[in-house]
Image (tube, rainbow, N blue to C red; front, side):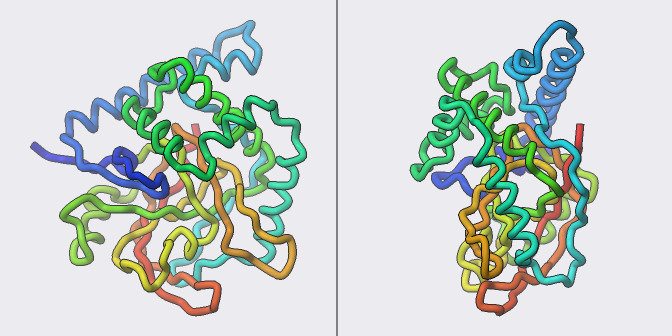
Length: 289
């Protein structure tokens, strides 16, 4: 039976990056159909009259986009080195400062800190449950569902301060049997231009391709990255406000995202010391609902 890759299905002890799994075509199709049904139900909630914005958000299966008027950005040209400019870093710091000054409810802050804290086990647990249930919060136990809705709210509040599209990166750990000799072919077969992918999980990304790459040029150079242009998510890095860009460039993406594959490329990445090396990337862009 034919098998198809689901970019976000597999889990890992450390919840950074994507761990694709090859699924039977019928299973993959069933999961895609379920996601479509959840979005239809969410649209019905949005169309109901007499409900406050808060009540609608609490009754959605998937989180609402919290962004406003966001300036569009294009993915860099293939040969353009990937690095954060000092100008972009200042914009990110401004967005984070604005979010930090916002009055976020105490329980929302606590849920966010619990899921994205220093111990990765809670994010692993929540993400695995979301992946098992194709992102449907209604299928989770009551305590976990409450926590997920609060995290959704925190991310949505942060998204309101996004001034422009983000270009962020997260690693891909291909399934068993994919290696340096066949990784590009595997990506092209499973994620050709126009293919829709879904992130049922929360996604830890970075504005720095080097940071997302982990060990940089010294690592397993054949393992690819996702290069994502998106209006969504929240900058959570702790970069300084002066003296240029800084590698602490973390950015959290919400669950329930729909994206479109737009290319498999080999791109140059510039390390903090100025050296450059090449990586394969799967390029993705938002499918805005």
